[in-house]
Length: 317
Image 1 (tube, rainbow, N blue to C red):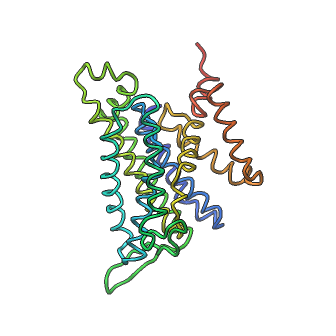
Image 2 (spheres, rainbow, N blue to C red):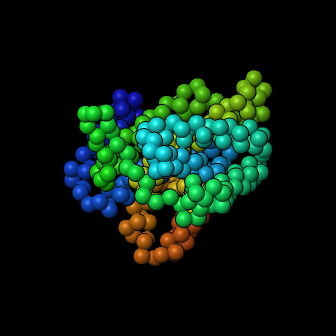
Image 3 (cartoon, rainbow, N blue to C red):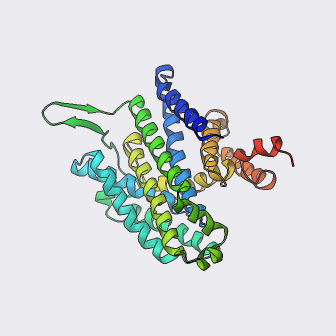
């Protein structure tokens, strides 16, 4: 697709999304749309490290770091929401840098298992230690809404679903823009090369460990931002929300959408979140069974995910 045409389409989609609250006023629908934006950032940022060949199941834990940084600082210390965002990112960079420097040399399933263990360590830490700060298993309640204020002039609190819709939309568009530009840059091309053949990349002088660590930290930082957005939106957070079930759900959206292209995770989330919410919700726990079967079908019949279906049927040798 020509670049000018693609830019026009993207700009048109952004304008349409900006007009949605003028047409859709139902708070539940806006809640679902915010959830879609939330998962789009999570899936695309998880894919950013996946293209190097590493599956990071600690991704939800980094979202939890951002969520708890925002919740604790705003609720207990009165810090502005906007200041808690960089705090959560800095904490996440330190944690991701530490765990990545230890584990990114691991091959095969070992990296997956270590990040799985790390996610559980974070969940257990938040559940059992410093309960007066983190709230234990119950978590934290009544997290304050963000506000925009100029001292002695005005203060505007973002409290409605419409406010959060636009907040989520802005952060999603900004995140996708940054991740897309990174992936299409020389840095992103090196990451793809590492994922395809590490030995070849190493033979031409690429510092594989440094590139993988940067990708790991960048992806984790976006997860932290998502957690910081989720905390005031939901107003209640607990350790269990950022554990392995969330990581599995992100992975399902990623696989079904397609891991091979930037648009795959976006398509997977846009299809599966509304489907699970409006169609499969009456099935209760069998909802997860459907998603599991969908993953199996995609892996067997559509290796490229949903995003690859048009090419498979329209393009002929």
